[in-house]
Image 1 (tube, helix red, strand yellow):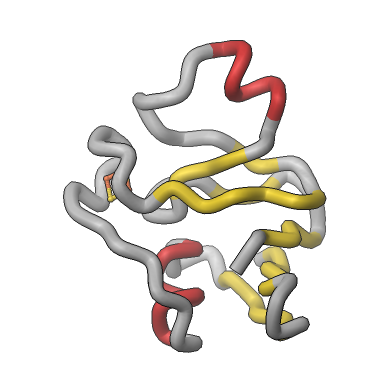
Image 2 (tube, rainbow, N blue to C red):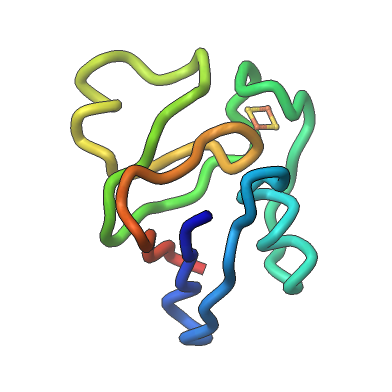
Length: 87
Ligand code: FES
């Protein structure tokens, strides 16, 4: 598990192993669109302000992956204990 902090509302959520970031943040009321839910369409992009995403999508190239400035919430997870996202 890891934590997601919604920067605007200062809400901290826990993402368990069996849930996606997308599921957890939308259940908390975040307004994030999604489509494929398999990391291929890019619809569910979220902006990462701090922390290191564990990218599991098929959208980003290596440079974007290394930058870690955005991630796709339907599949990607976190290498750090907490990700701070711009929501
Ligand atoms: Fe398609 Fe996340 S919903 S990449």
